[in-house]
Amino acid sequence: MNEDNILGRIVISKAGRDKGKSFIIIEIISSDYVLVSDGKLRTFETPKKKKIKHLIFTEYFEEEISNLLLSNKKISNSILKESLKVHRYI
Image: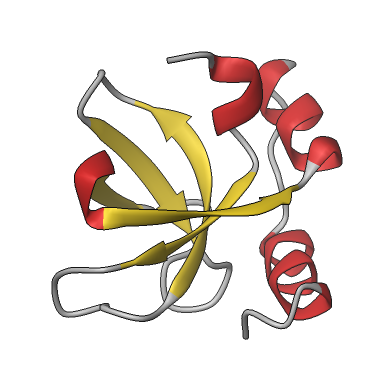
């Protein structure tokens, strides 16, 4: 799994209580798990741990968010919400 093309990727949950909701991957925990956030219910400070097999990967990738994450900078929830809104996932 390449960290460069995973962090910042917009995904949709296909299992669990949040089925059908969209998120942005903000951290890779292991080869099976990632942390996702939507900037609203699941903020950057309290992300959701999800199994990768329970996610649908979209073609949308937020390079700005990825670059901020790779440089260990904090991301505002408004950036996450706006990214999902731009791609019509909110």
